[in-house]
Image (cartoon, rainbow, N blue to C red; front, side):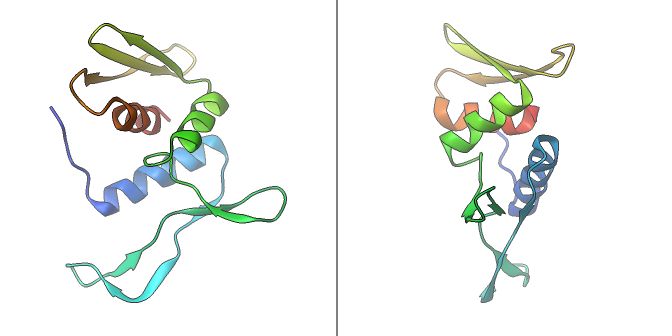
Length: 116
């Protein structure tokens, strides 16, 4: 079953994943742009790298950010015939599953962020 997240839920999920990884992120706002509920449009999360450069950080949409997050947190990814599992935590109790007919890259990124 595929559950679509609201923008607010995605933002919270990204904030929690960043916190778990020790990454300081912020969400710039676009002046004048409004969401249907009247709130200002929030752009992609950003963070400042060690060299002082600011860049976007979104493991929900960027394969590289998702992989770096998984590596940093020791998240295991196992691909099996027709499905995959992502496990995290000292006891590897957290499991995320996605159907094989889904966009596997997107579902893998989502599972990594959820596990984080």
